[in-house]
Image 1 (cartoon, rainbow, N blue to C red):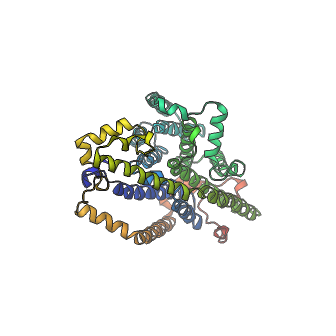
Image 2 (tube, helix red, strand yellow; image 1 turned 120 degrees about the horizontal axis):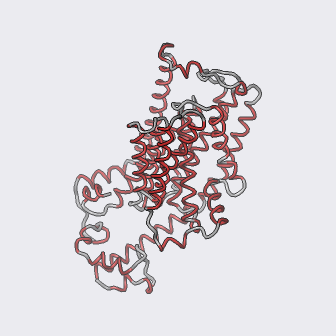
Image 3 (spheres, helix red, strand yellow; image 1 turned 120 degrees about the vertical axis):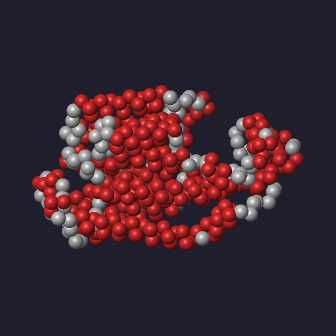
Length: 446
């Protein structure tokens, strides 16, 4: 945000909006690609495309339009990067330290980032229980992560104004937690949505996969998501859900969707279970398909209310700057203000340095004619072209990954790791090798 401020020369919300939209969309695609590594073929493509389609609906319009809410994207970016680095790294190795550093850095985005190291510790603890981490060194690594997470939690500042939003009882906490975990399915059918992730974890724990198995990232991401919604349920039980939290909920929905697809692929290998797996997937998608329109129906009114509020608040500031009349910043006169404390707002607007940072729309000065303004306007004018470029990039990434996978399968036998070469699926999974291709008709399930 400081870089954008220096680049534009003023508080440029439009440029911040562009940055947030690009960053948020790219983050979702990157996370979906990472989660989809457990899948093959058409389901892998669906695991990336479906979240993008959900993201088209501006559930989290707050984070894009508010400009300064980039931390709602930086939190999952740093957290999931830390999980990615640490999930298969030995304790105290450079890669493990880099993952812990990313997890600790997420704390400086939002208070709930204090729980990122706890999610890494939980993942390592499960890996130790599965026999994939052993020794005092690994135990000390887990202990250090837990201690660091507890320390970060103690550094979360207490904001008295936020106490009114907290859960006042265990019942309120559980109600808010269920609302977040079951989004967008509602109180009853929504309970089906996190079920695939629970089964995914159960199967992964039973298989005791190697540390380099891609399923560990999905497990770690689920632990992180559970910690985030628990923090929201505790700290914002009276205001759940709000627009700014929906980016996190979409990430959770992506985790559940990938888990559902993985279960279908796995069950499709078992004779006589393909139709049952297809029915379960169809039921899960039906719950999402019914829930999303219900969650979306309030958006037009909310966005229109936002627009009206911003226009009225902007008018109050413009009139005050033009006339110096304090009544324009007095909420008792019916004025809408862009800040909850009128006295602090007035002090800021009276500061001559702050006035130079205000956008031209508030000061009635002509916008600068420079390269930044020209590029920004050109970017907005070419919105359809960016949509097409996004689709092409998505396809290129998918087919590029597929070509890489084909090349890996065509590699000499001596290039295959001993684990991949020798691992055999359990008997209840049909006894197929891990590298066996799925039946040709599996993709028809989609």
